[in-house]
Length: 384
Image (cartoon, rainbow, N blue to C red):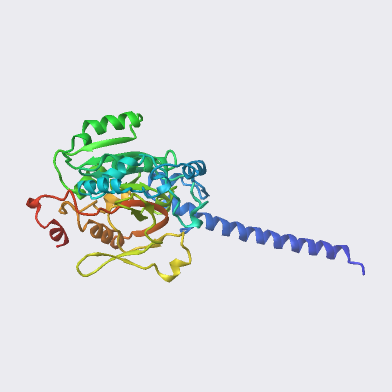
């Protein structure tokens, strides 16, 4: 059956008009998607945060696989985060040093400053992608009468296992320590070990406590994100990008790493668990609640947590100061984690735990270096 030429022309014109209409509708939809209030570009523009203006809507793998392979091949005392094997004589010598800092100074001295660790992350964390242009971080580490090796091991792990260029500085805040090696000797060692000046020390003339030491470090920081750590930690593999990535997306997000365990006797590096939500009881004792059922299906994804454990977290400098920092009425330590957590949630922010950022922490065998009697019940005072 033959089709009349005029009919073919009409059909062609109709088809052309339909294609033109589809193109117009598509372009309008695309323009709306790219410029609307919920678009990626608009979300990025809405972040009043210097580095986020440069964040590209694509992600990369930041992990240093060469370093991971090198660490896994190392052998020696404490390497790969293994426990130091104590002979009867070692155990006797070790026990004599426990009271000095609440952990075995003897064993710490047998382990290298830059020792290797094992990868305790969930397998899904390997190869995980993060924004290609992350904000810079200032790492603030307050200390008081800290042991030499544990302090330097903290610094080494933070730098060695973070991507180059993301850490702007590490600020150690000496909260009025009296040990001589924590003065000029420490300054000189850091100047030699890190000639670029990326690690520096602020020496406070008198002890003001953990909270005020953190605030002093935050005031000196120049990075876009503040990361607070304790002085007896070891950062895990690729620990930094999981903390910075959520902040790059929304500067009002505060991110906590998973806090794992360094054994106080053997310095074994091991996982605590696979995460929990922070909470507290009526006496304000910190409690750990199981993750919500829906979070357990995504073991590598960050999840909301009502309150932080305290010492280890990342927050944008802008958001920290918008919240007023730490309450200046708080002294020494105690309650600051609740005060900051409440402000974060009540002022439009969000707090999450990042399973792919693992930092091990020495939980002391006993309480040492606490203030003298003149400070009184500072924790009770802070809670009021």
